Amino acid sequence: MRPFVTFLVLLFVFLIHYTGYGQVQVGSEEVLKIYTAGDISKSEFERFRKTTTLFTLQSGDYDDEAEFRKAIEKFWTVTPFRIISPKEVSDFANKPGYSFCTFGGFMFTKHNYGKGLDHQYMYFTYDLWMPHDSRPKGDRSLMARIFLFGDVDAYMNSVVFSYQGKKNFSTSLTQYMYNDALLYNWQPGILAGYLKEINDYMISGETKQVYDELKEKAPLKSLAKDTLYIPDYVNIQLNIFTGAEDEKEHKDEELTEAYKYPVRFVSQEELNKMILDQSRSIKYLVYAKCSTTKWISIYDSGTGQLLYSEHYSMAYNFRKKDLKKIAKLIR
Image (cartoon, rainbow, N blue to C red):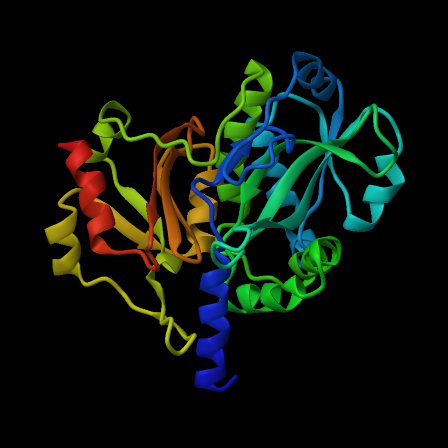
């Protein structure tokens, strides 16, 4: 794609607002407000806990199905589970006793009614849901969702899909996510941490807003001595003028200035192996961004616990100042 055309597409992307203030949300779709999870009734939580959860994967993941099974069973205790293909979802959707984890996406339009431009908000998600028990077949009851971080091609394709209307947008985007999308925060090990969060909320019967943050000193205290592992995809820097994604390694002296504690950048594959290694426990960072918003979380691989979570508006790339903020909490 020519640089000028790419710039126009990216400019349109940012005006549309691909946004999200967190990586995991637990709640229904009953509230028609962006960033807000609706309530889930006690009876719905109870109905969910009696299901078998069927997980789907991207088409290229089934060669590594054993890795994903290992990741899911690491912390998922709230229901029995199976891994199925996307084509099998329709076979189970009309049968009682099943819940599903499927890829998806949605578009939300905020109308300004003549006071300015309408704004469209688009999301890439991995959704936990059940067929609705009191509505027509095909309707669903959302329980939780994980917000996913796609590469620049994913965002450009979603712009094309947005012209098809809300219903067709979701259909086209879902197919693209299963077959073609590059999602930086989609790996078996990273999924394990996300599912630990959802699992615990499903057991407690509580909801969680997508913008909830955790910035406390106590959970991060051990990082004064323990190594913080960071996936090297954080080095991918987006140039909003050319649409290019360039990899820029952080220099040792810059890291030392920003974060004087033990830190190591690793590949996604290496990080995945360390997270799933039952013989050790590590602290690892997960970074995601959506248009002009980014969010950073830290997990403990041994317990699956979320130790830190913060979001930043009007931010495009991972910076050393992000590590500075974490370092201040470790002192």
